[in-house]
Length: 227
Ligand SMILES: [Mg+2]
Image (cartoon, rainbow, N blue to C red; front, top):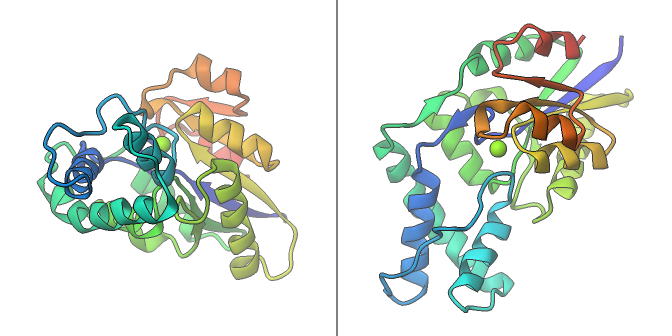
């Protein structure tokens, strides 16, 4: 039987952080830009983007040219604010079917569960821990690996192959909620399950090339993709 490496997106796919990420980023930006209180990531598009991309975009919006050091500084401060903001986020939720799906998949020996997310690695695990989902994952590709989504998926797949596939060939299945996720999956030759819990409708996700679009992770077709 073939081996599968699953790469899960986090925000909009497994959970909704209830605005915690955006608030923590705003606090970080205020600190880095010297206490100006008129700064925020308002109007910066987060969905399907990587953290370094989001920060560069937010800085550019305020007329600040983003170099790698400054982006890292914002991300370091963001990470310091994130746990408290996650605790405060009353709208935080694990999305329907996520816990059940991961519980079922983690028990299988023909599949390895990984992450493919624009979050930096520590931010990813902070969000997952808030929802009790962190222990399902032992590898992934993250926004801290590469600012481009297809490249971070490639990193995640490579780690999965090294850690879990024992030299076997494996197919990759990406699970995400935005057209960016779907296009990145296609770019690395992975199959893609798209879930419309993140705000993109089925049409947009299908148009991007998703093999399967479901309204949430409770849909029985999801398990069929994993064979
Ligand atoms: Mg997402």
